[in-house]
Image 1: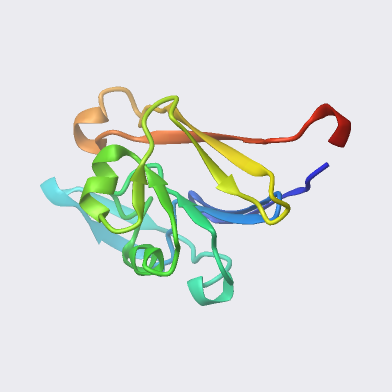
Image 2: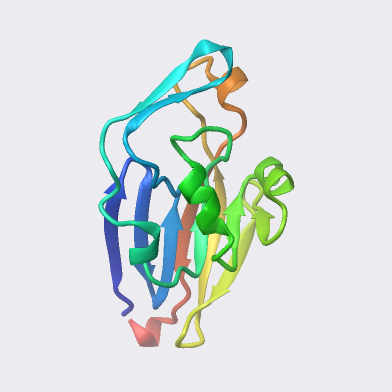
Length: 155
């Protein structure tokens, strides 16, 4: 059976080690402070991430719920994306980010190659950004579900 390790780094950012792969969620590493948004709104970050991007080591993929706000993808997180071979996100975010970003539609599945040769299946699932009515400001977001591909004999 494969092991799963989750290291919460702060806010929406977590390092997931699943079946030999290293996945990072919504990379946010900028220092605490106020971050102005369009329309006069301000996001306030109150704590630093537990690790810096340089301390993470290699990342196989980023699971990015959306790219529109610095509380889900900040400047330091954007810089990190250049060092990651695959970014799974919404189709809209993939269009804005370009490069190695892949827009994962609802119920679309992608298989990531694990070191042991068995795939890790990542499935895009529907997500809503709260509170109710925030969609006009938040834009489209996605969530992810993963399964390790194993056979009964291996469990």
